Length: 192
Image (tube, rainbow, N blue to C red; front, side, top):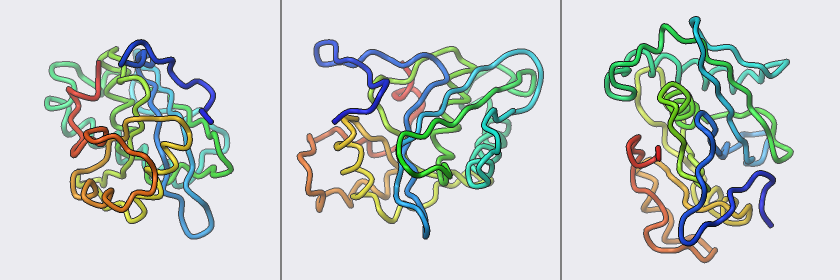
């Protein structure tokens, strides 16, 4: 089974998504199961981040605000000489499962904002998992194997996750290709 909007394979590569668009998995929470989401972002003149979902899920609002602040404070590392404060970002969270909160999707939000600003596509078929805090640290993912299995079930590969999590995949029950899990999130490798 594959998700709607899945990139078509071209040889060994998948076509890149358009800039500002990224797939992510939310690990869920106490009341929700993990869920697949696509974050779509556009950058234009202005300032700030505007979430188009109405009402905006509270958990997603927290993730996008942390991503926004990390983009501002680490602009030179992430987007070079471009000024993110001189751009307005329009963001939409699209859910493809019953989960609707978009919780703990900060890393994907940060990559989507950077991708839209740079006008560079993210590697096709990539799912990014993880939450970034206001201080820039990556929160641990406690159900990484479940998320990897969900990604494979949805026809998405590879999965990019924070490096402390990569060792957890030895217990994964699905057929997982060696080297398909990125051991760290590196912007230059994620963007095409």
